[in-house]
Amino acid sequence: MTLELVTAGESHGPALVAIVTGLPAGLRLDRDTIDADLRRRREGYGRSPRQRLEQDEVEVLAGLRHGSTLGSPLALVIRNVDHESWAWGMSPWPPSGEPEGKGTSPVTLPRPGHADLAGALKYGHDDVRNALERASARQTAAHVAAGAVAKALLAEIGISVQGLVLEIGGTTAEDGWKEATDAARSDRDTLGGVVEVVAGGVPPGLGSYAEKGDRLDARLAAGLMGIQAVKGVEIGDGFALARSRGSEAHDEIGQGLRRETNRAGGIEGGVTNGEPVVARAAMKPLPTLMQPLRSVDLASGEPAPALVERSDVQAVEALAVVAEAAVAWELARAAREKFGGDALVDFVGAHRAYLERIAWAP
Ligand SMILES: Cc1cc2nc3c(=O)[nH]c(=O)nc-3n(C[C@H](O)[C@H](O)[C@H](O)COP(=O)(O)O)c2cc1C
Image 1 (cartoon, rainbow, N blue to C red):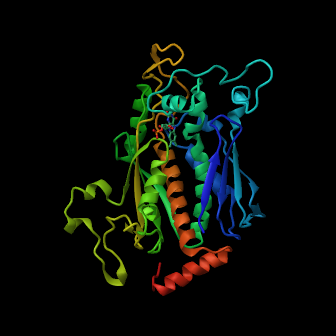
Image 2: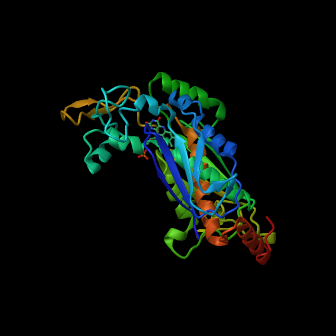
Image 3: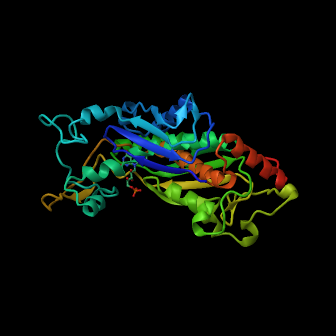
């Protein structure tokens, strides 16, 4: 028994879609809670005006009845409200009438740092838009909706997941973030940053050392690295451990099998050890610059400035929400594998019985 997620949707297409399979029946979902996470993803000081346009709301097409999961695939839809202005340019079927609105002329100026060039070459697109529409971080909205569902499931067994910002543009003090963002904006530049996700209430025993792909640290790393613009991931003290001695790097086992330190970030051997799970992700500066970088026009082969399309100055606060969803998703998946159950009561009961067996009080 495991959770699976498949998403679809272009940035300016009609909608984003997420299909979640492997949920137990009887899990209560709350529309406002999912929409609140979608709202959190859009917020943040460095975001573009598009975020005010994206009034994301989740619609459910299948798998839910009167607010409870049915045990069947859950189908979620988030409409792109600005698709209206792209209706001709992003029409799934050959459009009728004269070209109007946005996206009507082909993009041939790939942006360094985006999937534009590699995507156009790989798939044989003459119009770079055919690559950038899907590569865009707009798709993270679908992952945030699925993450909200994962958090609802985790809450049933007392696990909470929270993402937060540690750094923006190299500044660790929160009172400097607005200033750094303003400075980058006025220089028509962009910033990156670092986020941290902490999960509490995690029992020992999620994940496995049996195979590489079962290790929870490997899955968390893949889940976080799979987010657009994430270029580094660490679990617990991560890179700092490489610079410390063994006597300072590990978490000694104390009374009640608890630890006084948590340098491992709650995972040893790919398995949770009962301490909070801590993961960090580093985001590069966003690649669309209002002062465009040098590129080459794919139509003429001549040097030309890269495409300038409405873009954020930094999206680190948004990344904290997306990273939270990614960690929640991987923890929920590991919990489904460990506790199984077709009905929520079976899942919760298996968790309780397991804690009793290992004599673990959360
Ligand atoms: C929440 C979020 C928002 C983003 N917004 C933008 C943006 O407005 N402009 C931009 O150029 N890149 C943005 N990105 C990053 C790009 O999508 C990403 O750098 C690009 O797709 C290339 O992928 P890679 O950086 O993982 O190699 C955003 C990423 C995230 C996670």
